[in-house]
Length: 111
Image (cartoon, rainbow, N blue to C red):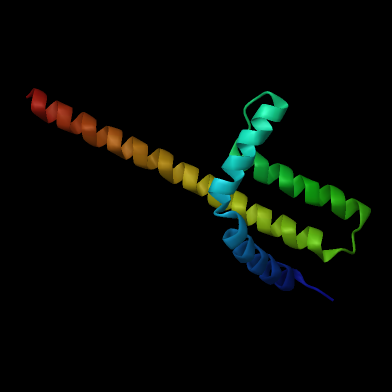
């Protein structure tokens, strides 16, 4: 019987292979988001792509609860969502830090 550690191990292997095939989750999900935004006629984010792909795996697991692929892929998508979300937070914080440095320099130069 497969346990949670097996599922996470297989998800790690799958994410590593897909990173080689499709690029980083951030880039791949952003590219998919661009297509979905056109198809759906409203903006879709990279994180939303990951959440939708996870939901796809949940729906498939309802049809075939014995198929471990659904759980492995859902775990992999969740890990990718975390990476994409944390990268976005870090990018936002970096922009804020840069803005603060510029504001500090402006204040110093104004004196």
